[in-house]
Length: 485
Ligand code: GLN
Image 1: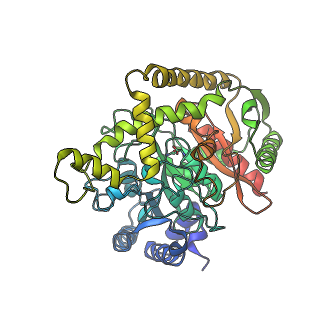
Image 2: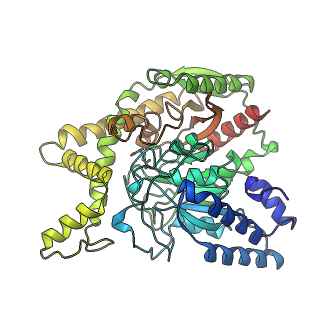
Image 3: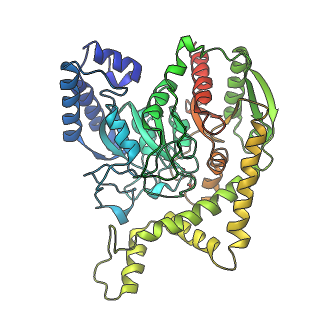
């Protein structure tokens, strides 16, 4: 039989329901792939073989008893290690949480499990999801599956590497400023940042609460639609989760729904997103995708996001401000690491944080605290909120003229380990196309649209108005098919 981990979820479900394979066989194949590839890639921080095999056996028993199949029956899933799974460690790739065990399960994760997914492990990330390369992990970097001298992207680098390397069929990521889309783009997979509020954040360790969203990372657009359908929707544990009904994303992608026909669609091409600093090969791949859209019947329209050049500065004020507040709870008293041998309360706080947090996390706490301090608040934080409103307005105006926007996901393909670690600003600039969506609250998806001369994947980003993920899936699926033919 073909390698089960090369399947997409549609094919895996068909094989499972036809009894061509069992959930236990699928699970074993995933665990073997992890054993084979993880020592080199460091994509997973924790493997859960016993738990996964027990879950798979329960799935097989359920199906044997004739229970109706659930949407993710037997699908091996990896969960980013900043999302809680009751009884398992949740480290956020930080020394400060190295020995912390979750007491409850994140809603998005619980919903995926309830849909039949089998959780095989927890994925490496940049510490507290801060980074674009996975090099900020306290447990060592994750590596790119196609070229281990390169980064898989970040912060959901372990999730992306695990999906791309065939250790699982799907993973969860979290995206505050691009952490799902950028690693998806680097590793040649599909990654979706949902509309803010589409997916519950309950059980996601907070980084920037007004920006964070959990989302799916998969091999195909249909798989991403399937996962989002399972995890989205209101949750009473998260007051910011939306009451909007969740459409049947997968059904909307069927042939009968006319999903391939993009006639009448206007595709917005933001002038500012094709400017300086964009790698020539990435630009060429994005332009080829635009041409493919035209051949599918869509019309290209030029639109403008006039405030795009402020997005990085804006994001790194708002995200660090929120992070400085969110990370105050890690103080050696309530959670995780406590500095040994301290005699005063001051030392308890100061040394636990000094020893527990890595350098990037400290840099951000300092930046955020500064931006929020009295005397600087108006100049930085308040100004950043105003700029955020302008960015949101840019998208509102652009969407008057088009159904979706298309732009590169990242300015370059995957870079080498160490290439940007000495220059944080250079690292931050690689988020130029992604952070804007989080500031505006709109959904975005990265999907593969080509390769560089060196054989590295290149991603295209599709952006839709808030709560219009269906459009993104439809346009993504159409392109995926056009590029495959
Ligand atoms: N790379 C961005 C940052 O470092 C985004 C991180 C994220 O989305 N979690 O903040």
